[in-house]
Image 1 (cartoon, rainbow, N blue to C red):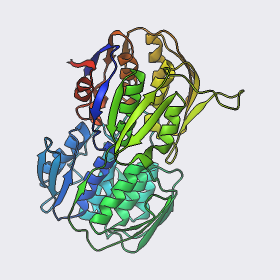
Image 2 (cartoon, rainbow, N blue to C red; image 1 turned 180 degrees about the horizontal axis):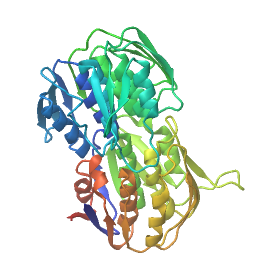
Image 3 (cartoon, rainbow, N blue to C red; image 1 turned 135 degrees about the vertical axis):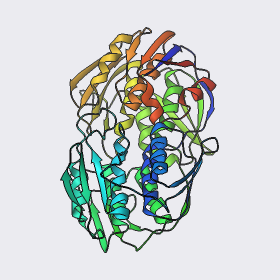
Length: 432
């Protein structure tokens, strides 16, 4: 386990370049299994989950050359082998399920481990994925510690309507469809920026996908995919996080952001706390005048709120970042997570700083900000951006705080603490 020691109270200043989005990197790594030709990926972040997948590829006999210093990874799955009876997919990461479609396409077999899971965000069912696999022709059998999947013939095209716009299920549908026989259609598809980037990567390899960025995808199967090269985009989660850190510390951080149009709704949410974002020449800055303060709505009898739901709503992953701003801003704010039912229980940890956050139900929390806060030792659940949110509060308070079990940050954000130190923060890891 890893803890973060934070000596807060200093404003963060400087310039920062965000890393690539974990939620684009992992499905694209899985997608490389669909081709036997060489693939080069640039700006690959040195994060735990990416290293797990690359290690699996090497164990399967794939050629993998990794240089995290330059961010370049070369992959060739020409001599790859897989036996579902013996091989185990990486544990403690939800994205392992993205390996199923390419394994079915290449080897006619795959498996889903009982312990495949990600952050502790509540119930995260695999049934939507199973439905997709079955629609393309896979058969599923219960094993001792895993579900075994088999495809005795090439995958066949399918039309499917998702119960909800699930990112990973949308990606699994596309992974099944690109080599399936015929034309497949997915209704209620997720369309987050990382899903769009994932689809663009498949198109570079020769996939035929229509409707990228919309709620309906049409995929016409091809006989094979080619090799190619891809440079990952900047992670809009990190862009938002660094802007919020700048604001919560009263600092001035310029964040590289070549796609400011992606952040339009995020900018409006930041403005609800008195934080105004300026985009200029590929860089973004958070301008704060008069301190953090919740902007009063015109409808005076309602609380101002931030709602998180599938794109184009605010990303549920970013809600903890806004909650951290909420406990520091003068005024009250309602936060509503419409995606996960167990993602807000951590807000009780904020009380250790002296903050007031009321959990009204499993999906909604209200912050009563502007209180005098003090350093504290808090414990993060296994949720990446909750650890970051607790860090945000700690870094805004003068004195020494401890964020226990902060290791999930490393799953998505390479060199995160080192980058904050370069901006003037006093933070260090304490390894247990």
